[in-house]
Length: 147
Image (cartoon, rainbow, N blue to C red; front, side, top):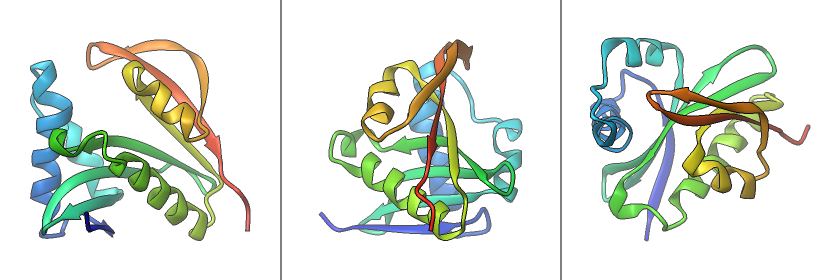
């Protein structure tokens, strides 16, 4: 499989596909819409995408919190492509982007069901489970290697 990873922003021609994927994977199964409030911050974030045959099949939003910390949010992989390693490739690519841009900390709010995935990638849970969009989540963090 030839997966092409890249960084885009909300002005990219691929951004509408990112919105469609986020809705399909993250909102529709919960009976929720992807609202303007959900996407308003996209203008100030980096977006990592994975494309297969020119179609966006994976995405991850990167929100800069401060000079050291990036928050990964809204990770989605097309259900047909899940369990293929794309999620790991996406996270590794995003971590490398952070490393190259001298960010040292990554945080994210993991769905409880995805906690094991992030643990395997070196993320550590912080605090207690909490409810977000009606389902259990846990905050997780990872310190990246320094240059």
